[in-house]
Length: 449
Image 1 (cartoon, rainbow, N blue to C red):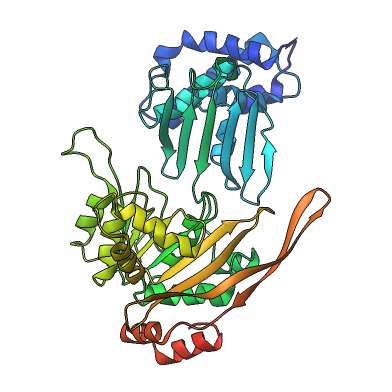
Image 2: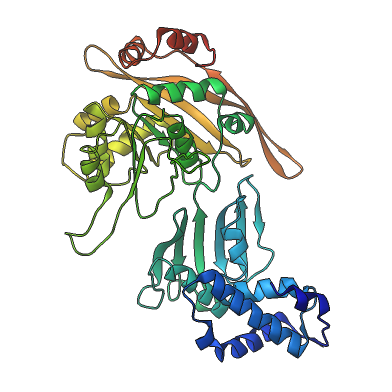
């Protein structure tokens, strides 16, 4: 920032921001050749310098903005993503929903949903900014492709609907989801009442000692955040192999103060291509992961034929953790069956037997009406000697009452431990190396070591 210009600047022309933006854009277009730099930071300094000089020379001012604030807004509008920039890279924002050019809502991590402080100036302005976002992933929005999906960064997904799918005078509709914007520690899950310490310790021990599990729930329920924490509890000497679709959300690599990697992680992501030889989906990545000596395999989300490969991996001795979309623990197995049929036409009962054997534990998480996230239930599927399956609830969040206070929904409830794990799962954990003392603490409700 040109501090000298900011200190000694004295404006004589007060104009609307849109007019100043247009003038500065026209001015910089004549300087474009001198702005070509291979270093983004150097180019930014050049652009800011030219902006500062022009505003100073022309003595331009926008009501309500200081000199430095005006420079920041001009730069964001011309080079970045307008007012969306600060929301895209904010740690407390998890979603930006654009209903039309003049209706932008921001969803915060604490559950608040508020209108953006600013709005696009016109339908055309909204389209221009969103096209810049899509350009990051090589996507084009036009009449021939009015619905597109891409990503801005590893953890930012964007889905856009344009004309003629939407009304032209609305400009655009879009959903920009910032996945897992911040990592939560065990204490934060407990403080936020997402789960109890006993539930978290139980899940961590099960994953560490080879019990495959599936985290289920709706979009935005907190599946990825929870799974990321569970994976972070894996000992450093065990190799984690993650498989994700389109863009990478996980960042599990841990380094010390000297940059030396401490744990053992491989992150992979799919690659879409119209050429079958270059197309790499989750199913193919899982196939190769099995030959890469993994201790724990994370399939980011089961949404297609990779479900069959995932259950095959889990049934053949690998520890697999994954997510899917379902409305309950019980419904999750039937969702898995439906996904598996996309790979093979098999009897539903046969597939049900396979997926219940593969994933004995299901975790159902939900974002409640009061915007709190709760682990609603943890179930274990027990296989009886005659082959029948019985699903037992181990933990649950019991809703006692729903009330309204000052126009807001409040939900009263409490976590309950319903029963201990089965003798069969206890035996499996012990065989996989869980110390007997840890199992005894687990059954008595004490903290795991």
